[in-house]
Amino acid sequence: MIQRIQTVFLFIAFILTGLVFFMPFASLISNEVYKISFLGITSVKAIENIQQPLILTIVGSIVTTLIFVVIFLYKNRKFQMNLTIISILLLIGLNIYMYFILSKYQTELAAEIKYNISFIFPIISAILLILAYRGINKDEKLVRSLDRLR
Image (spheres, one colour):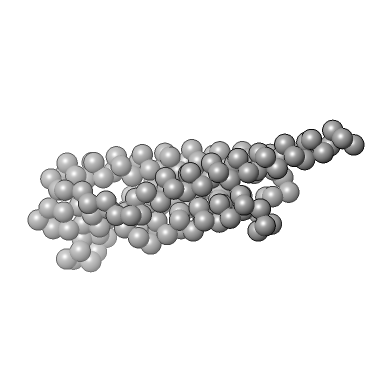
């Protein structure tokens, strides 16, 4: 149901979490430049994957899939609210893990971190999911109040 505002919030959050896969979320600059994304850590000069942060890829794909599934659960609002809360927690944990990976590689490579705009996409997605949760909750309260009138 695209006419519900929470569906729009969920769809935008889905797009933002999907974009994080294709955009590097940070660069490490030392004597060489490394781009860090969900698909791996690549050296700009050598154009090869140095390391694959597997947890980022797995959790990122789970969250993206979960948000996509939540969009189509509009008939079961309680389950939709529960999955939205799980998605919010996973996105917050994902962003914290992204920060720890960056700080780990910063000390290993003695490099400077340059954050890209896609680093804040999980935070924006979490905020959008909170707004979607509020809309879903409002719909659930409205349905409950109409059930009491019957």
